[in-house]
Length: 237
Ligand SMILES: [Zn+2]
Image (cartoon, rainbow, N blue to C red; front, side, top):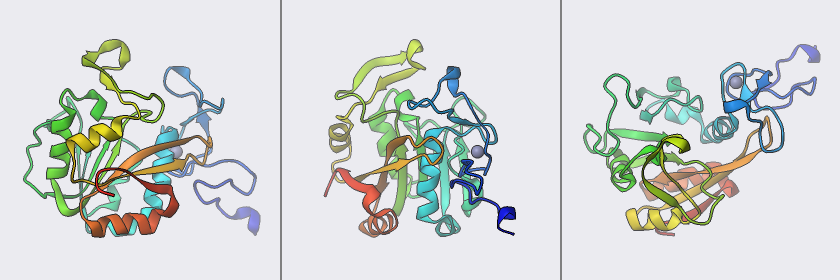
């Protein structure tokens, strides 16, 4: 009978085949522009199109417990397979340049409208990232949680900011460096910022992102679930 059991997504199956923690698929192909993972493995799931970071953060959300999201109102800026809209009581998606997309620098929503805000690989496309961060926190309820990801924030020491959306750099205004922490402390002096470091169960690649819990209680909630994989990064200790 054991051979008929389905492998748990994200784990090696009984036959030793790696499966995607998002869709359970076991087929993987080249990533954007034909790239492989840094360790040479194929990064893109052929089932759900997820990449390393999507699966790494899906594991994080599985640990936070999607059941806890059932009563939450959520908004996500830019589509991303990491999050399943069905986890949430209410879910809104804003896609830049599509339909009634929101300006993240002046979000047309009231204060405290959401329990959870997702902003992954968006901030580097925004001219005024200070305004955007203030807005992302403003629309959160008092005990809300912001999930924030920017590309490779730990690779370079210093942020390089061009002051315009550079076409040869995917339209990014800047590439953040390790001094992202100083920027966050300057922009959001009263907001604790936690890092989460995790591993993609398919390629084994490690990467990190940020969690900004708006209240001490929400911070405890995060730390209780993610344990040693979260650490203080910026703001009040
Ligand atoms: Zn998948």
